[in-house]
Image (cartoon, rainbow, N blue to C red; front, side):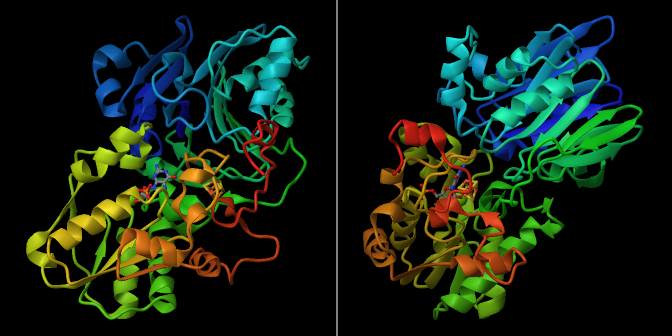
Length: 462
Ligand code: 5GP
Ligand code: SF4
Ligand code: MG
């Protein structure tokens, strides 16, 4: 998901809408914005679909007045898949000390357990979202202010959370102690903004101030910002898949350009898995920076062998298998005139179910390619993510079922190679993967930094 908040700027909701539009790649199912204006109170608009279709008309934006607002673009990883407007964030609750809206990116690993416990003690849930646990935990806290209640609540949840919350007077940003999901702080005129990624600061011309640190809570008011560290410190575990795929290439994370990390993954791949070929082609758009790196390192010319229809969203993000299956052809087409008779290196960011790679290989052979060599800019995805990226169950992950050679046969390509974990860490600016890894890489290694409590309780893992 993507989250964005603004305080101390006129028509804050307009900036939130623009920020969410820049974060649309993080979630395309639905979006919502909550704002507050003195004398008017809290208002919210929650809709299915793209930000550009829902939050551009003046009719809608007039419903969201005020100098403080926050919003969310949703991609369901927890709660019900598909349509349920009650699951669309920001969630809102009215406490004795005033209202509070919450937008959450990440996934809580003990939400089911907490929900059962809270329901047992009388909480009435309104949604199927894991985020709602935070609200009920806040309601039960005996603290006197919303930020203090939030600290109480967040100390009880486990897993990944970057949260942007707002009250009548404050914008609050918090990251879980491991910092699994990103969260940025920016300055916009006299006001403050918070966003999942720096690309959302760029779109509104906000100045990047700094990253909110793992375990940090930042409270912004028009008077300034206040920082605290409410949780026990934990080893940092930023999601390495944000670098591989999830974040936008024009974002900067941990002082590193995402584009540059991806380009370097391509360089690593070319070193680890060279091949003789005529063209290096990306699977657009996610494979593009790595393909550029592969081409630069190998000296094999880069070319656009596959053309993407700009009017389709990310295929994977659609929640049902039927849509996903059709998606590849709706979205990508082979540049036949270029491909015919050529030995082609195809670079993609990841293989999950293998749907994309299979379809693309068929299309490209159909177009008369002489050889097809797949190079993948991440290690084999062998484990599901429980921290906010929608990977399917283990049984559906191609790499959980097959060795690399079996996958090569299954995809029926001339060669197949994945970047190594160490190569990926090198591209991300490390010497290699340390004994205590510098990132979360559980979907590649099975090394889960936070125990997936609910999954274990349900017998879904191990
Ligand atoms: P597959 O077709 O193998 O199931 O999925 C691989 C394709 O989906 C890749 O081209 C990649 O760009 C995209 N993708 C890979 N992992 C994820 C993910 O976790 N979330 C989303 N939204 N897309 C992904
Ligand atoms: Fe990111 Fe993978 Fe860890 Fe999930 S399991 S947080 S996708 S690195
Ligand atoms: Mg892709």
